[in-house]
Structure formats: C-alpha cells, structure tokens
Amino acid sequence: MFRLKNVNLWFSLMVIVIYILVDMLLFSNGFLVVLILQLFIILLAISPIGEAIIRYIYGGKRLKTRNARNYLLPIFFSVYENVLDEKPKTSRRIKLYLDRSMTPNAYAVGSNTIVVTRGAVETFSPEELQGIIAHEFGHLYNGDTILLMILLGSNIYFLIIFLLVKMVEIIINIVNALLGGFSRYNIAGKIILWLFRGVVALLVLITQGILSINQRNNEYNADEFAEIIGFGENLISALYTLDSIDYSDGKISFLERLKNSHPDIENRIEILERY
Image (cartoon, rainbow, N blue to C red; front, side, top):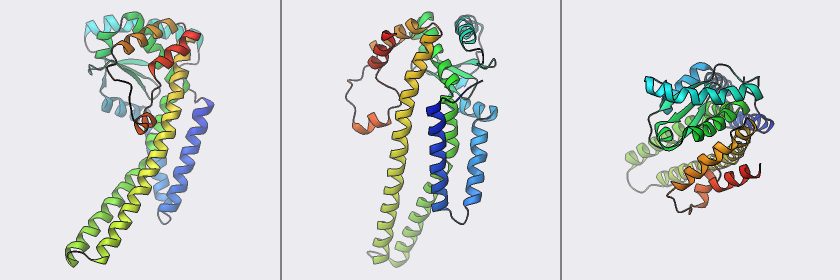
C-alpha cells in the first residue's frame, strides 16, 4: 500500500488542475474529449497494466537465472522485512526486477516494482545494495512513483500540442510551396509558428523545473526512509561508492541543473550523516 505524502498530493492536484485549465483554453470545442482521454491515461498509468508497460519500457525484467535469484533475493527480503516491521501498511506485493544496463542505478515503478541494474549489482557490495533498495522502498511508500505516473498520464496534451505544431508547420510549407518564395503569408506563418513553439517550450521548461525540484525533495525523503528502517549507513556507503566513480567535473549549466531530478551526492551524504 502506498501513500502520497502531502507535498506529492498537492503537487499532483496542482499540475492536474493546470492541465485542465490549459485543455479548456486550447481545446474549448473538444475539451470533454481531451479531459476524458487524460483521465483514462492517468488511470491506466497507475494500474498494474500501466506499471507493467512502464517496467518493460525501462528494461526491468524478472530474475531469470538461479544465480541472480540466489544472490539478490536474500538482500531484497532482508530489507523488505525491516520495511514491514517499521511500516506494516506497505504493500506485500512488491517484487524485485533486474535491468541489464551496466550503469550503476536502481529505480522504482508504480506501486509494486523495484529494479536494480546489472551495473549496480556488480558495483555495490550486498550491504550497499540493501541501502539502495531501502531507498527505493521509500519512493514506493511515499507515493513518489505514483505521482510520476499521474504526471505521465496528464502529459497527453503536450503530445496533442506537438501534433498541432507539426500540422501548422506542414500547412505553412504547403502555402509557401504554392505561393513560392518570399511571401507575406509565409513570413506571418513562420512568426506564428515561432511564437507557438516558444510558448510550448516555456511551458515545458517551467513544468520540468517544478517537477525536478519536487523530485529532488523526494530523494531526500527516500534517503530518510532508508535511515528509519535501519539501512542509513548502508546507503551512505553506497553513495560514497557512487561518488567515487562519478567522472563529471561538477560543472553543469543552469538548465541542466534545473532539469536534474537528483540532488548532489555530497548533499545527500551530509544529511544522512547528521542522522
């Protein structure tokens, strides 16, 4: 069983209300159709079917080999037992999956999926994997993954806007081809297209920035969850290991920092060590 923390709940409601208002402005004639489509996709996204689809897209697969099961499942269930002791309302249906990516990573999907990558298995010790898996349990328990699924479903109107931009672009190109050369219709059409693209880009940037800020806060909350259930030191050790293999120079642009969904590793270690 998951729960949406207050900040996630209000954030979800705020974004959905914004999407509905944009729907009303952009699709006044077909507003009901777009709204029903959005609600259907949101319900699909948070259902077991949607979870399975997203898990498949991300690359999470069941543990097929005996070696994988013998090594990973004891680590997984040792954390799961602590989670159920501390948080009895947690779902009993959460399962562990393996992603063949060699990037050291782990992620949670929907309500009942935790995925570790092959890179994480080969990089981290069993104790460090416990800390990482405990962190992902935190995302599931706090409802962070459900929030992302809701936002994914709500974003249908971005796809519709993208298709509209493409349609306008095609129409402008056809008009340009028929009239030929440098016409005032062509110039006016391109100005409209540029303005349209600018508004969409700004809207996407603002939404992405707000979402990234919320996601970074969720990372700290998931770290705290790992500490509460007894795996804080394990997670600290994993973060130190991850920091030691981070080859970036730390110099990223403002836009990259705005879109970054994870806090700096050193900040996470600092806060965990205070506990």
